[in-house]
Image 1 (tube, helix red, strand yellow):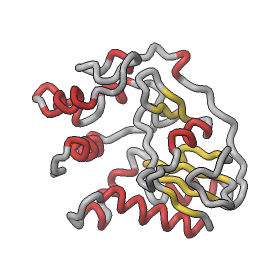
Image 2: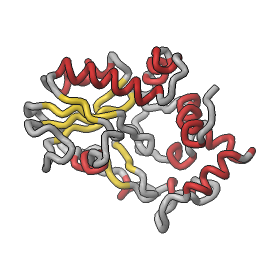
Image 3: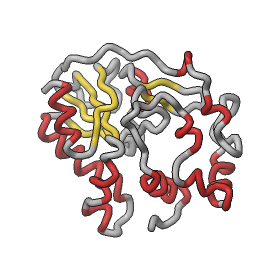
Image 4: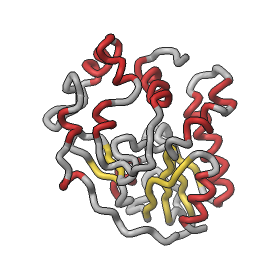
Length: 220
């Protein structure tokens, strides 16, 4: 197994490697783990693939989590590894530590993780622990030190800023109002981040899906 082969397999399923690391500890990992691969949506290709799935159409709860467990489970089997998910727990796997250790994601000024290609839209559908060492890329340069940080001034209700924790209530209240319609189709803070690669695009319908779940509403 090498990273290029893993990328090809993941891409066929609408996913992309968003980090790889040799773990410093085995917390949340099988005892024979040598490499951890972090996988997230390959956007904008991801949404048409997921929204065509049985999980999306069957009306049962948590379609994205169920899709992720099926698809990453298939990849783990094919690669001879073990699939791990953020919801596994408690105790929960240290995904944020893995993201930082991968050299592809960092803490942003607003507290969210920022990724070298996905910007503030980074998300991890799961990880695959491999019992073999694969070659890892050199760590990337974090984008924030040289950035004007438009993320700090983009939230209409200042729910995300550098001096306080995420104000979830303010965010939800705004999104439920008429003035928050734009936020439901894409977080303005995340959209303001210039770190994402030119080919990366979060479709408004995908943001609407996630935000409906965040607000506890039915998605059309």
